[in-house]
Length: 436
Ligand code: AMP
Ligand code: GLY
Image 1 (cartoon, rainbow, N blue to C red):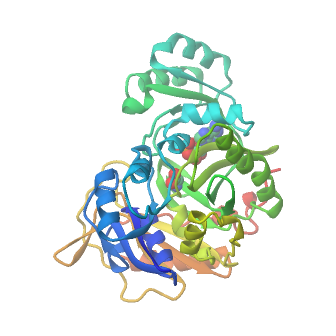
Image 2: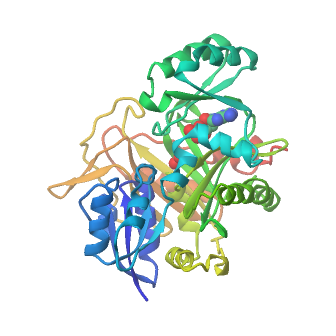
Image 3: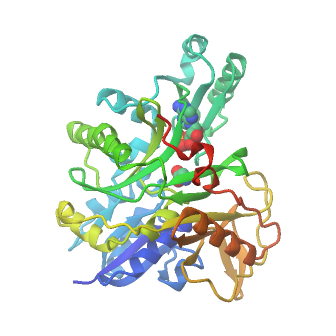
């Protein structure tokens, strides 16, 4: 039976989710709340706040929604999935996203670290301190070898991590965090050891018992080429990742994913939806840098187009307790995503620049909208990250080249992007081999 689907969110990740869902033979009607001009070409964009249980439940009732898929973390942390579960609906929808207790894996880094320690999931040595423990925290800092990583425990829009190169700067940063640098999110700070290695983003869909592994990705966070300049929400991504060999992925399943799901069960935390493992692959194996209770952005834009298993059939199987029957089929081609950002981002930037898209998008490439809006039929920039451009090709070099080509063809004032996404991993470059 066909299902009407509601996607929550408004970025490039949600456009990629909508795109993938729109290909499904199981899809009835597609809705996105609030969506963007890109999702508007595939779905009906609904007004309302994805963080409001009331707005979401109203849409579920009005449009006979069978599946709710949450893109960002904020609605999950705010308890939107809990609200749906508690609502007196005749036929409750399948919820893709955990309730607020499962979302704590992302919304509280202190909780996530305790969880990993308790369940033997490899992670950097750490301690958490609340702002009334300044003395103790400073003492602990002194005992650690720099670089020292300080993390605001709460949600800080991906900006709450600071890597300090020496003791004085770590102490200064800690005091700034306690003083409210990241608002309430840094009222508790996780102090952890620096891990040397290569990063990898791994995603699963799970019902808390079984799981389906999605294509892995590598995200490029720094604004400048050669990984320079400040951190952003993500300037691009590639998939597959050459050092994520079958052996490495198998270790990740056994040492990270399965102990995490087992831990959730032991703690009595129900979990269904996506789970994103931000990993550091070190010489002696994988370590968890962070959990996210959602997919990544821009990783989704690079990874979902490689997924050949019908996404909606996975969601339906999950809802019916049949996830273990689903087989993950992945496109062997490589994908590269380049994010076009506004000039000045991640610092101050202007919105409202007119965006001109090429009349034709080449076969194998796609344009996902991140921060755009329509005004009297004109497409305007409306965020730091404006568009995510994804291309599929036989190899990573070809995919990158096609995305650069598309990036050149899009025009807006102040357009900025990185031309080196994935270039460090191309055959022949130094870091293309597995670190160990
Ligand atoms: P997060 O917001 O937790 O993803 O952290 C942002 C970035 O900080 C990560 O992508 C890593 O590059 C870096 N990072 C976080 N924790 C560590 C760590 N323990 N060791 C080294 N780098 C880290
Ligand atoms: N690109 C990293 C994230 O979505 O958290």
